[in-house]
Image 1 (cartoon, rainbow, N blue to C red):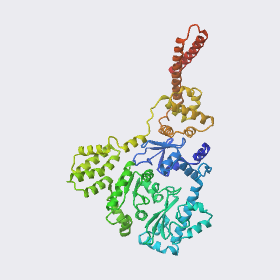
Image 2 (cartoon, rainbow, N blue to C red):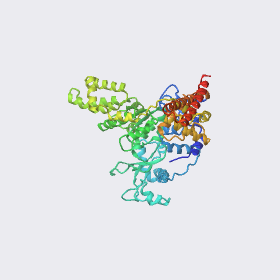
Image 3 (cartoon, rainbow, N blue to C red):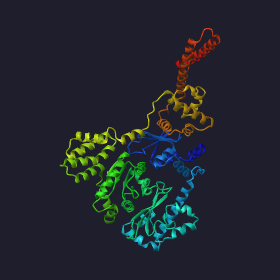
Image 4 (tube, helix red, strand yellow):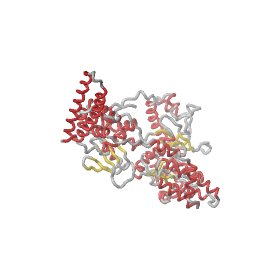
Length: 586
């Protein structure tokens, strides 16, 4: 979805940047900047700064910078169009419907539909038809407050009520067929019948799907989730995120449990930064989503062999994302909901004290099942742990893990390291992928530095455009910045926002944002710009002077007209160079 520069400008003008950022970290004014602790990582000394007049932020700890749209994208896990919509709603700016996206209208209708149905399910839970469901929830220790917080509901044991209800609200059969609420075989049969309903909300607190727990013990599926739709993908969504997100931001830690009632139990026990995957193993997309707010992930799975295996698979995804990974071992036969039901918040509080690093837990559990005196068994144990060690990015930490394994299996670290090298090959695919994702470092040069200084202030650019042309710039990106600046200047747009809005290349835009918000050009004066422009012009003239002198040497003596033209051109170049050098010496 594309947005006009006028729309983006209107949103910026209506949003108080400091007020927006203050919702994520506390800011204190110092001069023309506001400073605070980084919202992107844990720190004790403020390294995060906002310049509201220019409309940018910069984090020195993480080298992240940008405008209000980039900030919201980082904090809320949104792409650019979603960030614009998010801020437009906050600013009260109406966006034009994007006719290029044929699914946009259906998405909006689905959000409205799911919100309506969630409210209806919740109403049924408090109706006489929901008595059994309510009794089950209370037996599991679910409080009335939790029912309200998570909007828990009940789907009646009826095959026709939902379809009739929604058709009476003017939803078409075609739309309902792709809504994810009905059986694919019998289009009028609701997917959820005689089940406790757990609405699944996305990071923006919109209902996008449902999870249902069967009340009839004869139902083949104890738990059932909505199928993927235009607004829901189970691999990219976690349960309980809106209820957890504030605490996740504050603590920079998130607990991962297995089910809906586990999330609710942890929440009731005071551990509100808890979420759950949706019927699948923890995925890379879910970890990436949580990484936007958390620095550490704590895995809370069953203590049986299946739980240990699940912890291992999940820990790989967490390590790939370069997050701190921990495990909270549960007592055999108990999940968080059972523990809370038996021992309340105190029991959960005691259990949390036993959190340990994920690798310590996995090594301990693997060693318990291995005869470390048997060489073949030790080899198999190492092969099981190698995938984890391989994805660890820190060389220092990887070396520490190898020593830890060596101590456990009584094998020299050098031998383990050699086996790991053979197992992984000369270069692991993960490392290669990481290298490919690393942003390319851009070499600093005078042209680019001058343009960065000029696009931050319109008066600097006004001087530059009357002094040099884009042809005087050798650097390709510097020339692009010149063109963007010229267009912004002619349209009367503010600097540097007007320039940044015109940059299409994401990598270049990121570099420009980081350089401008870092403050490295804030000390430039008009005199600095004049001196740099003068050097740039002199460089171009010296190049022209060399070319003319070469041409003079090759011209035939009989070609008087051409010789005269070249001599006049050289004289003009020499004169301009002389004047520039005099100014440079003054």
